[in-house]
Length: 504
Image 1 (cartoon, helix red, strand yellow):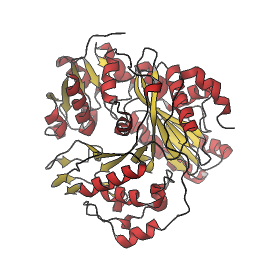
Image 2: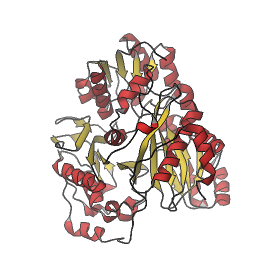
Image 3: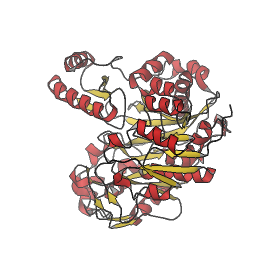
Image 4: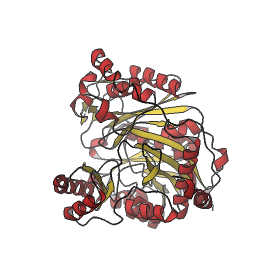
C-alpha cells in the first residue's frame, strides 16, 4: 500500500531520542520539527531540528504528555506525521488514534495494535492462546490488596506486582510475604496511576535469577513481519535497564529461533505494524516466558542497528509512509557483537539517586567501533523534571571480547563534570567476571555491586581494593549458549508447529 509521502515530521519527544529522529529525517530528506517545554528552550534537540515550536509550560502534563496540545501544534505547523519516540505518549492508544483522526500518520503501530499488545494482560492472554509460555499469575486485574494476598498464598511467595498499562519498572513491586502486600500494592498502584493514568495491577510468580532477553521485530503492515535477533537486558537496577548487548550470551540458536518465531507469531496475530519489541524472561533452566510487548521503539534500539546494519528509525518512517520491507527473514544475518551502556545523571554511591546541575564539562568518546547518542552538550543544565539519561554509548566488535574492550576504552574517554554519572558503575560491570563470562542475571546489581567500589566524582575512576574484592566473588559462574545467528521460516504456522516441543 503506497501512501502520500511524509515530508514533515513533528517529534513529540525530547533529549537524545529526539536528536536521533532528527538525524533520520535529515537522511530521508524530511523536515524535522521539534517541540519544547519552557525548561527545554535551549535544549540540544531544539537546536538540531529544522524547526522548533514552544508548547508553553514546564509540567509534563502541560507539555510532552498533553496529546491534544501536541496534535493541535502538529496541524498548525502542517506536519504530515508525528513520531512519539519512546516514553511519554509513545504507547498511548488514544493519542495514536487522535493523530490518525487529524489526518496525520502516527509513526508506530495502530491504536488497535497498541490496545491489543500494549496492555500486558491482553498480551498475555493472546500469547496463551497461541501456546506461547507466560509466567504463572493472574489473568485479570487484581481488585485490591486482599485479593492479591489471597492469590499469592495460592501461587506461593515471592510474587511480582506489575502495572497492566506500562513498563520501564514503574508500578512494579516484589512481595515476599502477606505482611508486605498492603503497602506494596498501594505503592505500585499509585505509581502506575501516575505514570500511565491506569492503576490496574496484575500478579506473576517471581522467577528466581532470571535473564531478561527481548526480540526486536519489524512489521510492514502488508503481511511481512521479521525479527532482528535479540538483546540481553539483564543488567538492571529497580527493574530499569542499564546495559544491553546483542547477541545474548545466554541462548543458543534453537532458543533464539523459537523466541523469534514466538515474537513474530504474536505480532502477526495482533495485525501489528511498525517497530516493536517482545520481551521475555529466561529462567535458569533456559525456558522462556513472555514478559510484555513494547509497542514502540526501545531505548536500546542502537544495539540491534549496529549488528544488523538496519536503521530502525528510518524503517519506522518508511513503513508509516506505506513502504513494504525490502528484506526477508533470511536476509537478516547479525554480525559481530554490540554493547550499549546508558549514561545516566545518577549517583551510583547513593542508590542511583538522580543528580542535577550544569554540565561544566561534557566530552563524549569518539573513535572506531564506538557510537554515541546524546541529547546534551557542554553548559546544558540537567533538570530533575525529566529522565536521567544523558547519553548512550554503543560499542561493536567482531567478538564479545572485542566489544567489551571497545566499550572500556570509550568509557575511559567519556568525561563529565558538574554532576554525578553512572560511568564508574558501567566500568565496574564491564570488569566483573560474571559479566565478562556472560553468566549474569537481573539480580546482578544487588548481588555484586557495592557502592564503595566506585569513585563518586563522575569522572570514571574506581577504588582498586574494593574493585578487586568484588571481582574475586563468584568465580564459579559459567556461560550458557552460543552467539550464532538464527534464521526463521515464518510467522504463525511455524510457531504452532514447533511450540509443543519447546520445553520438553
